Every structure is written in C-alpha cells, then in structure tokens.
Image 1 (cartoon, rainbow, N blue to C red):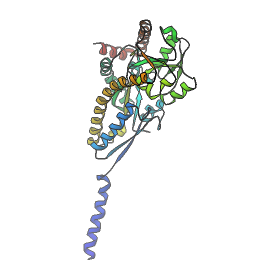
Image 2: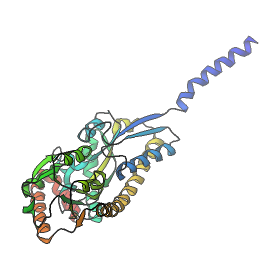
Image 3: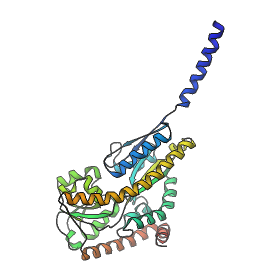
Length: 325
C-alpha cells in the first residue's frame, strides 16, 4: 500500500504546482477622475466587464471613480510610475508639459464631432510616440461633448465676462479667461459644486455633461452653446504592466479598448443631446451664442492657435497641417 500512496502523493504535489499558474489572475487598478454616473466612467466600467469576460476572469480591472484613488492631476504620473496600471486623463490638462496634449482644447479649431475625430486622427501618432517615450500606451480616447459658457448673467459680448471668477481646469481654459478679462480659478471636477456654492467661481466653459454632473443649474442660470471645442479623455496603460501580460490578454484588452472608443464617441453625442435637455428641464436657459459673442470668442481662438503654434514647434505645425488636409 505504501508503494502506491507515495507516487500518488508525489503526483498530487506536482499537480498542485501547476494549479496556481492555470488559474492565475492579474488585478489592475484604473484611476478615474469623474463620478461613477459620468458616461466616460460608465464606459470604463463596461470595458472592465468586457475584459473580465474575454479573459475568463484572468485580468480583473477595478475602476476607481471620482478621484478616489488619485486626484485628476496625479493620475498620469501614477500610471507612468506604475502606482496604477491604468488611468484616465483629460489630455488638455497636460498641455504645459507638452503642447500637443492640448491641441483639442484650442477654441474653434475643431467644433463638431466630425472635426474632432479628424483632429484626433492627426494627433494620435504624436500621442502614441510621446506616451511610449514616457512608459505608457494609449488604449483609447473619447471626446467630451462640445464646450459652452455657463454664467449667472446674460452675455452679449466677451466684454461681459470681464472680472468674472471663471473656473479653469486646463491651461487653455485659463488662457481664455485671461484673454476675455475674467479671473481664472483652478478647480477640479470633484470640487466644482462646492466652489460654486461658496462663490469661489461663478462661471466656466465646459460641456453639458459636466453641467449635469455638477448640477450647475443649481447655481448658474445661462448656458451658451458655443460648441467651442471637444476635449478628449484618454485611457492610458502602464507599458511595463501591459508588456507583462501574455498575448491573449493583451489582445483582449486592445479589443475592449477599441470597442470602448467606438462606444464612447457614440455615447458622447447622445449625452450632449440628453444633458442639454436636462439643463433646460432644471430651469437653465440654453441659448445659442449671440453673434458678437461668437465673433469675440473666435478671435480668442485665433490668438490661442497662433500662440500654440509658436510653442509647439515643428510637430505642432505638422499636426495642424495633417488636420487641415
């Protein structure tokens, strides 16, 4: 009997060595800055679910919404340094680091979904190269709905914005404030409602989606649908973490990312229509910009494009030339 038991015991021990490998699970964290109800976050939740199903649970992605893991300005560095395997950033927030991150924050350069997609196609090769140099991979990017101006008072021209405390969330939005004579105040999305309630800010330029997320209708009365630009959120992956995955897991993640990109752009357009309707339903006046205001803001856009090109150098010119072909 002992002779039969020993080989069986040895076999069982040998088999047990392979069990963990066969059922190995990789767990990733995805740092996100916006509420769980935001369409970008919902899209990432769906991506995590898709990856879970496609990999049979071998790659588990946990989405940490509303800046619960890292604050918005910290997410890119966290992914770059491997503190989080994935993260979502607003590209325009990092324009001061590298000008090409902020091209989609230039007012009236790309002022529709079609134009925004065209600009993304021109920007993407530059993005992928830069992020690769920084140890990251671009998984996908999705545009926010077009940006408009929220205020407490009616506007006729840009001069009506002079002196207003203006919430800035990127270098571009801060520069717009400077050019129209407003006072730029940096406030992140998670702190926006509180800033409005306490009078820290009284105006901003952002999307209908953020307007609903932050319940701007509780504090502000007017929304001017200028469709000034469509900034993009990008989902980044730490390159070392990605390279450590086997090929089937990499392929599953890339496929889920491609699906998320297509789904996200469609969701953005739907959210734009839905959120403008919600702003109206909650008592906000949603208006087209008066002709004088639009002309003034177009001049602001021209100034900012000129300034941007001077800073962005040859790559910036190449990007704009590719976009305008």
